[in-house]
Length: 213
Image (cartoon, rainbow, N blue to C red; front, side):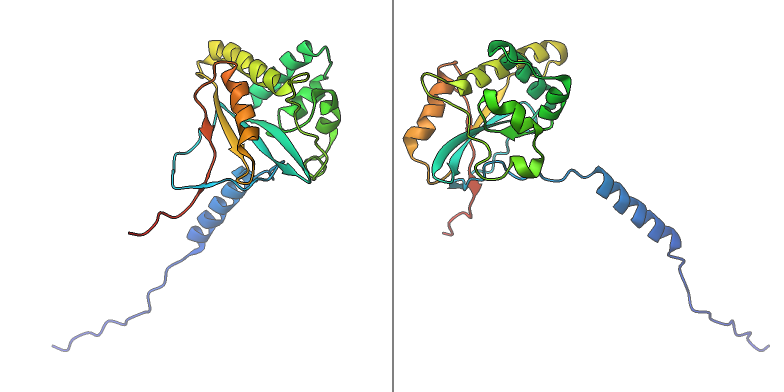
């Protein structure tokens, strides 16, 4: 009996559904991604082989670096609600008034470096204008006007109140200094922290390759 030859058709796969899924995922990642904010005070951190990551929440960063020919200190807080609560306490301490709109805008600013007397103007600027060189004068930390001390104190106070509500834990601190900064300037920030019994803090460094044996 003669064998029946089966016709062989080239196999094909309909990729339409897969393309739809790929574009849906791409759209999702684009819409949910958070753009990295430019640094208000760019610094070149010293190199280190330590790979310990800083926490994503509950962290205050104190950045010291050169802006033009001046040394300036900027302060950053990771948590939006902590920024708003700290601003409210600072406003009470310095007898200043910030509107609800000011507080909402300040909650979006991750890092700033200005005297509180000039903060309302800084809040009103766009991100681009705010981060231009020379726009922010830095947070005062002189013996006669040590606003950095007050920001640290009120941030810890605000965090303590928020901790009672959600149990977020103790506020952590990190110092981010330019590699070219002189040690006494870094030491001054350490002294301000230690004056408030903050003896555990991190030093931010850049990752370098380990030496080959």
